[in-house]
Length: 241
Image (cartoon, rainbow, N blue to C red; front, side, top):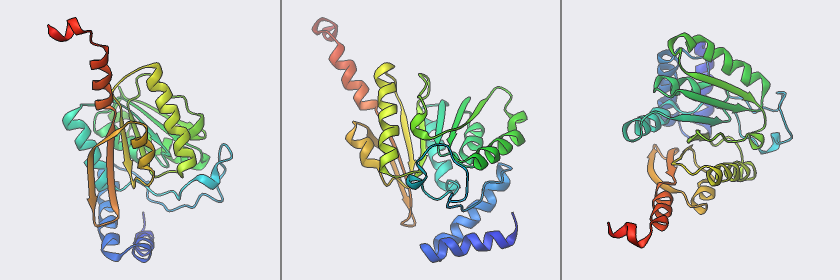
């Protein structure tokens, strides 16, 4: 990525938020792209891209997930839960998918409705695939609401990819999957504008981080709901043993 583009990115963040945040972000972007051998920095309002489905009006601007928050999220999951299967809704150029592989995730799926971004994601994955021969990567070019959650998928990543209309539909798909196959899952949500959708569905926030006012990370899970369900299933005889 050229210095000119980094300056453009710096100015975009600085003028929309503040320049202290812009400097922090750009430094993290430069280090992150080099560390993971990626080419994922871009700002795109998606208007000129060919997309699957009719929900372009509900989509947010494309921007790679902040490396600082991304690594904090994966550090937390790795420390207390180990490596799992992850789905990134609105995977863009594949930043989250590649970083997840470095953190040991073995089944990694990205959902993206913009064809050009899917191609870019597959290109970034190809650069590191030889480093992770046992890792299963998959990029699915489709609208997020069409994706059927698989039984073993239990980490769902969002970097504020769409508005509450699509988020509600995706949340319903996740809940449907849970009803069919009860399991412990995590919602990793950067810039969590619609976190209330998951809280109202019974999820609880077990990790929260806020830095420099605008950088927010929320990790929610259904662990307490599973505990309550397990306790309800116990018979009085079992409880006394």
